[in-house]
Image (cartoon, rainbow, N blue to C red; front, side):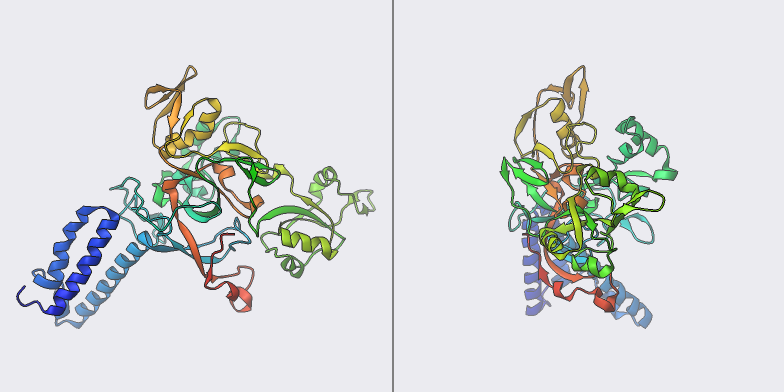
Length: 476
């Protein structure tokens, strides 16, 4: 220690101060055991940390240099990705046109406060599976309880939020893009969830292995938060109401429409003019004739066989701006909003409340420390919160409700919950499909688009959306 120079003491002091401040922020004081290591690296030098630099073998020195650089990079990436920000790519069109497929985002962890990882032993940048090796990217032990560090703020209404997919706790590996809890009802709706999930587990050759994933290892989703803890939310004819009052729609919200053309088949240029991507253009052929008649779309004529035929009809998403443009363009003979029955299953899947995608609720969003009386309907709505997210045992025997083997008629929530929806309202699997998002699933807030690639164009022909580069994410 007597040989330590003044600059060594200064370096040690700076590094130790940053390290201690980090420990205070995290609140895990076991990490103070790392201070002697830092002291030894800079001052006492008892352990020969840089011994490899003195090797006379150039190959060994080169290998050691690369190993040192890689380890340092992995550790730095791990801490940055866990506590500061992470990269996220928009994979689906659920937020079009607010965020586009192919947008690469910086997601701030400090906006809402970073979570202490549930699974601290994991490989950086791999969410749950290591590429090539196709194995888990994390070790299940140890698993830490939920804790969120202090951040710059909290989730607010209309924030665009990245979160772990709540229904991603259980996954059939051959159907990872399908909600495990809705998949059984796509098999045989008359058998129910338990029978079908047992069938899936017994047929791994078809569905793959059924696995459980900790919260921080579930898929990342991005949606807009429209419902806050304690809100009563309802959707009436595609309009969201909060506590009985209309919630202003996002500026670039889209709905699907059936567009009957004036007789011509649209080309790519026409679709592009109305902001419709290649994946979003859906031509409806004569198999949909029954729907056309139901919607009042009249035949354009009769063919030689005496059969009715129709002008080309497309099912496409449109913003209000694009809809107004289409109405004035002369390209459309009729425009009809997509019927409600296109929406598919809605939450709670196993209990029919008569709700649909476009007419949903009213539903109360759970709030931390709020207590509700339990009944058949409440159990259907909040069972996942009670069992899957707050880790209680629940059973119903002879009409009586038991939680953790205690007879109860009320329940007090442990977490705040949020209701998420996509701005592309008819092309978004969101809280209407799989329910609430618990606070411990919140990952962060997108703040910047640093790259945007248009999948419909080649890289050197408009494939890079230059006008979106380094654009701040607008929550409106």
